[in-house]
Length: 380
Image (cartoon, rainbow, N blue to C red; front, side, top):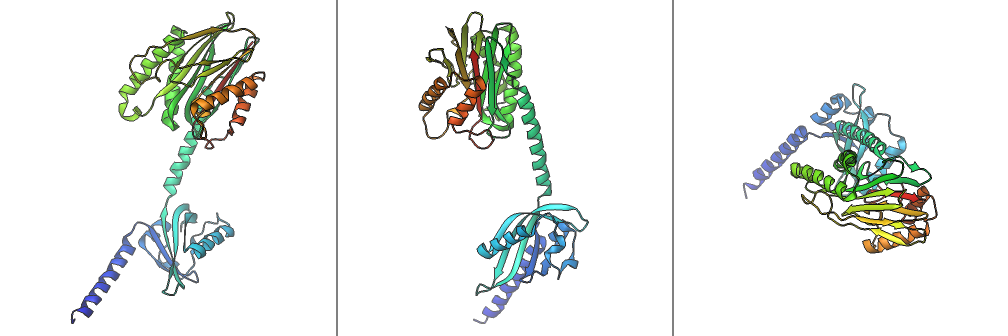
């Protein structure tokens, strides 16, 4: 019993010592005010971040205000503290040298045993470098998005055919891509691909494949050969970069149109079926005949071929258009077929707009889960 008081005192002193050392050594800035808003304590990290030292003791936090926030902003902070006892968020402040910076701040009310506020403790971290990096990344992504859009083919319209497309990335940039070429007066090649994934890596893979396609078409326009050559390229790329690309695979559909012979040839690798609607309204599905590109070293691609007459509509798309809501893929494709059949008399751009409208998609990024690409070709 004789040891109780000295032991208690010793523990109390140790606790105070530990609290003081923690206060002095933590990397986050700390500022404690009384209920009148006068600064009572600051720690060394506060000085390192703001440039202010003990001259702020007795002043209010207004001394570091940036002027970038309205009074309503600060009122919302104190309303939140009054309701929840705490507020977290970003605040722009100003250093002693006049430089603005942004900090991530947590403000907590400290109460007595009766619940009466005694102090307000603000703990903050300078996140200026992080914000600058984020802004630079957004700038880079905006530029990449612009470049990616520039790589998309421009509409073709003449007396034989009208081709146009729409690309809606789910994030700033994505892994879908469409491209078409007029090979001569009456032959056209269309290609739609989908890199499974989002963001920069998917976009770069899509651009790489687009570059390859152009060179492949100098060698052959036969759909089976085109996909086989592209598969070899993608497989080699994936094999050499297994550590970073092992979670990616690529689906694609390639269509060759001869408007003189009124003939369509196509091949698809793990891609959703393209839809061809003839002048009577009958729908032909352009189905996949092999796995997605790059999964295995060699693929055996089977071509499809059919003739057409009169006005017809070809619709190619990526799975973002049909993997939406709680519908099964099969049900979504059947619904899409009905929509295309219903709107087949419209112009190419109007068909795309109607499909997006009826599928309840907006053209704004981040409003859907997957990238969406639609290509329509009206054949006359």
